[in-house]
Image 1 (cartoon, rainbow, N blue to C red):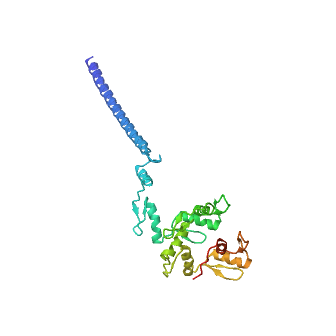
Image 2: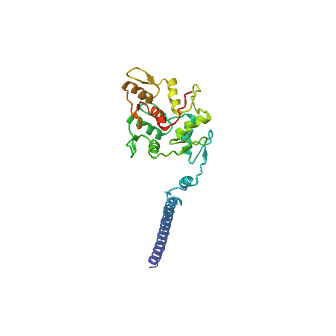
Image 3: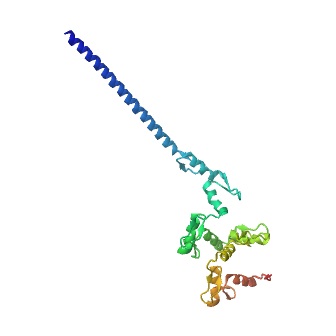
Length: 280
């Protein structure tokens, strides 16, 4: 009987040790589960906090504080990235990198049809409309279409009569900034567009482009009727009117017609009482 009593006591001790061990393991598992839940809660809280970076000016939200800081430059006008060559400043580093291509001459975006290179993909996209003929911007007044929004906006000033670009020297106003820039060369005598190969300078950028064809030996625009060649397609189109005798520009006062718009403008000075300046 003493043997059985001792054996039973040993069993109770082992059972107590086993239960104690199981309770300890269970507590350990519960602690691990609690820690896991705490970590997940912290991650969840961080994710929620990340989506709470909201611009107080316009209400846009961002997942990272850095993105919000970048966005705030739009409202504050801060431009921390400055070009070392011309000192022009930008709000984002990517914009500065794109700008630097103007100085380096890098044009990584190439037209697959004509091989012309561009420094920005948006410029290539606009250029492709030359080949496709796409003109998505239409004037609701006269129906004319344009391949760029800026060209439509400039065209609309013909209808509205708006001339927002004024010369500070003489007060003359223009409906296009490019026209004002060209006009300013009358006062300054500057020719800001210089050929890097022969150093010849021009007042207008388009004249420089036309000049470059001499060096690159690009194909000129040739008249099929007489064989004359021209550096611009517009010159060829005007020349073709000498063969067709087309005179689409008609004076509203006397009915006289002209092959070119500038001839009509000169003619209109007679009716307006303006004195024609002799050519020098």
